[in-house]
Length: 373
Image (tube, rainbow, N blue to C red; front, side):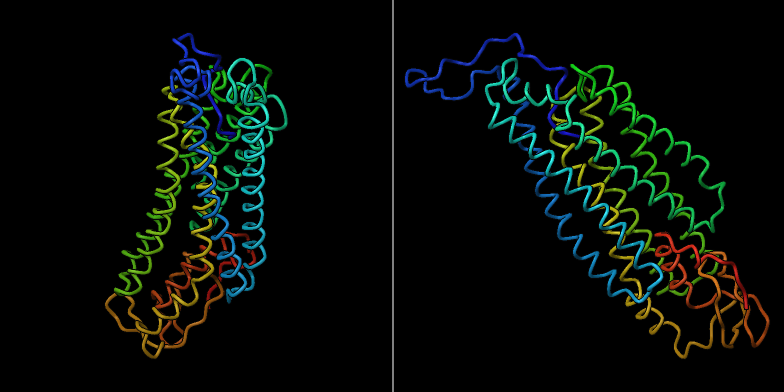
């Protein structure tokens, strides 16, 4: 959302600042201290948001480089399109928000009824504020949607696993649309009372959905690691996948909670966190994309150190040897039949399958056919 805010702010009825001049030594604006503090928070938030956009910029090129050099050609295009789309949204948001800030603090700094902040609030019903607000919301939906699809794939496209997340995602979309509508009404803004009634559930649902999906995916991966009694190196690889997901979720959740807490309390400090949050929701999936695109080198190192000749692996208490072939990359295909013995076993390349599942969550449905040997 566009980050300049307040509670339908007009000039507070408090003692004004001293008259500027050499007699008083004051040369600041003729605005109440509360309003000046809010403008400071808004300005600082935009500086931090710009720094975060720089991180997004760097991660974007790292994502593109990793995707282009990925050995999995089937997922290159959807991954690349997703990264470009998200980066474009983040860039448009930053440009639109900076344009509004420039007009507020430079072109209309003496706007009647609140100075820069008063001007920014008056623009909430115009395209200058509606555009970045809409871009923020759309970006949030696509970030949540990617995590939902990854969960769907990890659970072998079983629809039941998305019942509760789907309800929450639908609620997030509905409240997001209502928040945009209410904040863009003439005389309203993101901090107006009626807008907060929809905005607060929207932000809460988004962070709750991220936490829920991360826990669901992590449980699935850790459960497979324990169930099939994987080797130390393979088990460690699963844990690194989980750590990657948890760290990305924690990054988004931290700033979401900071914003939600101050936003719900009507605290002007929320202006510090909103522009940061607009970029963090892009940075988090970018970090995952980089790890997913680079999965080949990691799994090659693991398999090289753990599988030896590649012809032996443990199934239960029996050592089973033989050549194995795979026609599926779903987690359910961990039960694979050995040509030599016919036993159902847990292959030493489980880690490769897991990372393929994460990669395939970007849209390569052709990889999801259930198969055997």
